[in-house]
Amino acid sequence: MKTAVETQTHSRAPRRFLKLLLTVPSALILIVLAFFAWQQFFPVQASEGWRYQVLHDDVFKAASMVINSDGSLVVSQELRDGKGSILRIRPDGHRETVVGGLSKPDGMVAAQGGWVFSQEVEGAMVNFFKDGQIKGLFKGASVQGLWNEGDALYAIEDRKGDGRLMRYRWSDQSLKVLRSGLSETESITRCTDGRMLYTEKEKGVIHQLTEDGRDPVVLGGFNQPTFLMCDQRGLWISEDSTHRARLLLIDPQGAQHTVLSFLKAPQAIIPTGRGTYLLAEGGRDRILELTPDR
Image 1 (tube, one colour):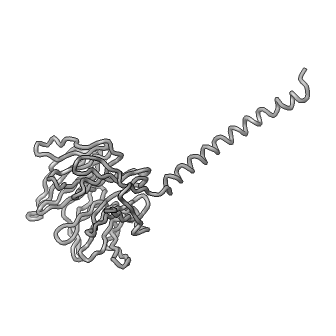
Image 2 (cartoon, rainbow, N blue to C red):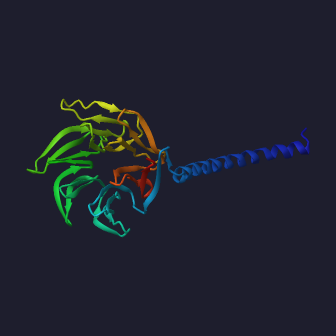
Image 3 (tube, rainbow, N blue to C red):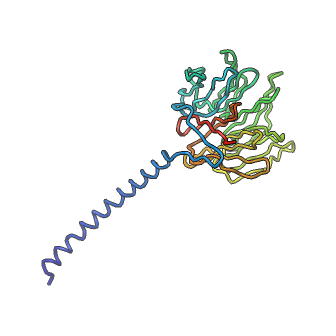
């Protein structure tokens, strides 16, 4: 026969178990929320020899950038459904919308005294902007990366398995498909050593464009590489990850350096011409200025 104490203890056990079940999910939710808050607000870390500052805030989904001859910064705001735009930020901080009503304006490159921009949506025109006028050049399917050199404008599509790499000639307005069947190719650039490179984001690799069409992988092991830029320091690579993304530099000797870490969806990096660099951090809606210590 159970005592009164034994009966009371036994009756409390289910209540304690139920309370524990209710408490565990709440704790898990708090842990998850704390983790994402840490991911969002943990400050960007610069490696030794570099420092950064926030140059412009409230640049929504900052993606690609071009610096005009007057010193103003032109940057695309990669919003969807006609809410995207191209913004000009003057040296005095004044802002104006240059082109509005866009859908995922992503690629942008200086060319022919103006600049070319693309939209990462099906069937959108790749456009040329100069002196306040917009001219359509050719249609693409989710064109993201652009590269211009002399008479050739290269455009690469970010698609799953059916993307293309195209070359447009300014002299005769001809368009040639150089590659097809590409998957998640987001950026293309020419390096100072003459190699033309492009990213394959999903596989985390970088290909070299070759005349035989084999396009070997020359670098790999990255976390969603998106944007490439080459200069005298080497090859710059930004990782389009929403958490703990990096800005990497492969120096001329082939060594890899993490210049910035704990970024959130970084996009284009460009030199300013005064020894610093600008990086569009789309995940935090801002432009960073990166300065080397030497």
